[in-house]
Amino acid sequence: MKTKMILDRLIDILKKVMPTADTSGIGRETRLAEDLGINSLTMMLLAIMVEDEFGFHFEESVQFENVGDICDYVEQHAEVKAQV
Image (cartoon, rainbow, N blue to C red):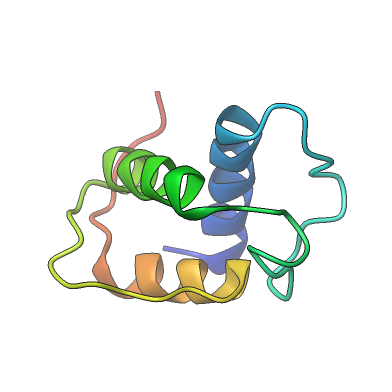
C-alpha cells in the first residue's frame, strides 16, 4: 500500500478522532503528543479506528511518536482494503 494513500486515510481518521484539531499541516514528521495533543485515551481510539480502517489488529504494544511511525507500521501490517 502506498505511503501517500496511508497518510491520507490516517489524516481522515485523525479528523474523526480529533474534530477540533487543525489537521491541515499534518505530515509524516507531525508528533502525536507534542504537535497534535493526543493523550492516551485518544491514542486508544485512534488505534481502534486504524485497525478497522486497515484490516488488522495490533498484536503487541507499540509506541508511536509521530504520524510517520503509524504509516510505517500500517504499511508493514495492513491488508489491502478497498475504500468504501
